[in-house]
Amino acid sequence: MSHAAPFYVTTPIFYPNAELHLGHAYAVTVCDILARYHRLQGDPTYFLTGADENTSKVIKAANELNKEPRQHLDDIVSSFKALFAELESSHDQFIRTSDEKVHWPGAVKLWNKLVEKGDIEKRSYKGLYCPSCEAFYTEKDLVEGKCPQHYIELETIEEENYFFLLSRYTQAIKEKIESGELNIIPQTRKNEILSVLKDGLQDVSFSRPRTKVPWGIPVPGDNAQVMYVWCDALSNYISALGYGSDDESLYEKFWPANVHVVGKDILRFHAAIWPGMLLSAGLPLPQNILVTGLIQSGGKKMSKSLGNVISPKELIDEYGVEALRAYFAKEISLFEDGELNRESFKASFNADLANGIGNLTSRVMKMAESNLDAPVVIPEENKVWSEEYKKAFEEFNIKKAIDVVFESIKTIDTAIQDTQPFKVVKTDPEKGKALIADLVIRLYGVAQHLAPFMPETSRKIQEAIASNKMPSESLFMRKD
Ligand SMILES: [Zn+2]
Image (tube, rainbow, N blue to C red; front, side):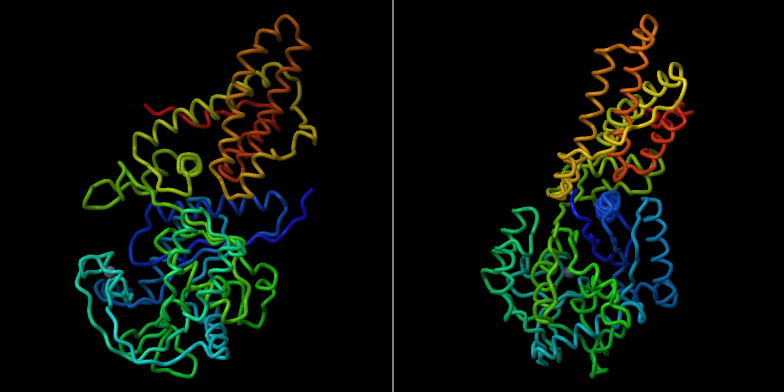
């Protein structure tokens, strides 16, 4: 038995400027699967998600809707929470960076640590600024002189900012990543960040004048400035655990994070700026940064202009949330860009869920209900976890883990074909019943291992086994 170790997993905090899309749903689901797995292993587990709210875009959007910014944020955050509930997200906390009570003390404490270390400096700054990204760019980031995200002309802005002297930490961050102490998964992303580090990190603008950004966390000791996104947003991973508050017990228990799950577009923030801040503050670094790919449709990024957008809501309404969770785990490789389109979704649903789990459950439980006098009691030795599956989870490879489950579904199907218990039971009832009981035990194994991925399906199968009844309706109805 491995010793139960605390497990802390985080999603990025999401920007409240648009409706959540499949990419957000994917990040939440990946973290939820990891969290559920660790809870089932008996590990004390903490799963954090939230919203990145301190952006002047919120004010602009609220004005356009004729709403108070606070009300606008509350409305968006409720819609986030509603979707996450539909996704069966089991997060322990939803942090909001506009929350003065929960979030701000941690951001302030972290800022002050960097000041104590002598790593914050006020400078006059001239830079190229994209108002849509709310970010500064250097010449080499630009695409044909324009914002690499928005392809618009950038504004040259000159202002007083506090700077974080990130350049001091280039070497230390490089060593942590090379040694694997800060493990970047997959290797391709690790190589990518190491090549950024090879060029050396620049000091980063760490605040904005309040006159330009009226919304945000005041810089300690200077009310004319508010924190820029780095200390404002990245600090959520520790402020959520009470860092900087009267009670830091969660922080003591769960930090450093086992894994930050991030998209490739925010790799640099998490694998360079964030570790630099933590090193400056003398705090431990996260153990792993798991960088996921994008979900594409028809081989292209989903976008309104291409007309290939599929919303999480649409799939949940048509197929149920567990089908979406299964697709994310099984059909998206996690480490590369993945494909999701209506045809691939339907094909996978029919093959793996309707004909796979659904059909297997019906067949086995029908035989059990018709032939066994009492529910099968699952022996303790049949409740152990597959080593291959556990190993896959240790590598965060949820696709490999769910593949183990689907392999076993195939194996059980084959066993039914080979042993024909429905025939045997008529000529040799004792032997037939033993074969059926064995199938029920193996079906239990499927349910057990499905639990992190498809908690509701797992529960239904376990209930069918415990009551020795075929589910009253098929778990997944084939779609034509
Ligand atoms: Zn931009």
